[in-house]
Image 1: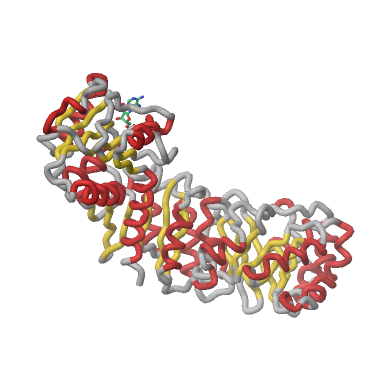
Image 2 (image 1 turned 120 degrees about the horizontal axis):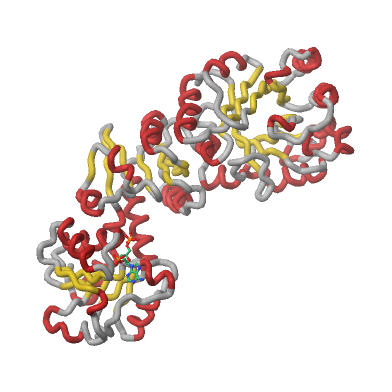
Length: 491
Ligand code: ATR
């Protein structure tokens, strides 16, 4: 169940919110602590008001008055809070009572009189308590849902929460991680066996790490996730801004595949691999700053990973972690298509000029050399260009200093003239053009930079009638290549 936490200050506004969010929610939590004081008298009749609206009639409601020490806003006397819960909870499906006041005479009175399900809650806003499974066992019951909202401080803590869920499958409980490290627990809540997951309306976040009901229901298809669903992820730090979940989940949905792709904030790659095995995760994308550090954890590295020294895609195959780098395919596919169009050729025997000798250049040089393209590397620091050729095992590659290239350099090359020009430095991003030579006009000019989509070099190439390829094509192609690899792993 997706449970909307209502953060409105009036009951009328809360009711209106339920109507706008109805399509994406299965239950709702009324937060008495966030309502204006004047609204408290109306709480008891709120369930009847909800039930009177046809499309809301079957929505289970949870009543909570969260204290400040638990992340809420209830600052009044404790006696008043328990009295309010006692007087107002009867029409609700759930009422929330904190673990530390469970045995309070008033709390006991509420529990004894209440006809619905009681949520017995613990909020740890600074960490994850020891022995989570033991806590869950102590608190859960036939008519009691144990709720633990805890704060993972890293990927290892996230792994502990998921492990606790795996060990308490048969119990009624909700165990959720607060903050960015906990986001996977919110998306996978149902799959982990939790009774519900909490969500906040757009722009009204009730807790750190809350997603909106629409994100859960549509992007992550929360209601369709089962134990059979294949899981994929993007790992990085930071990672929450990543566009990859949108891209890959849409691709899975279009292909009608039972798969879900989620963001995992990772501070420690070793714990991520342990987590990926216990969840389990079938494959993941790797982004900054882990593209190098994951390599040590792989069982198999393909030639692209070895050559480029970076891994952006990890796949689980026959109980082994296999690393690849789809930047190589992403770079190659748009270029190969243009070569066939322009020269009726897949590259062998042609010459390419690669500008730059950093990480992006390695992926390009590897793909070009694999296809039999002869390579000239031009770099500001010529020693780096030479080192790259040696490391990739390209004895025929030539290295030139960028400064030594004059305006007529390309035209004066004769039969060895490069017909493919690849720009791999970040200079284009800052509005620069690192290639000092004029273009002849029959070249394919490829800029790996994708912001802006038309760099100064590409602009000049277009005006000289060259064939141009933008970095955004490479970005699309590497994502597509990754999506094909993931799709092949869906059960
Ligand atoms: P990436 O992994 O994105 O390729 P990198 O490894 O830092 O990044 O490589 C950056 C590339 O851009 C290098 O080829 C660098 O040239 P040097 O090896 O001489 O440093 C090149 N580069 C960066 N700024 C440049 C500039 N202002 N003019 C020319 N080349 C530049």
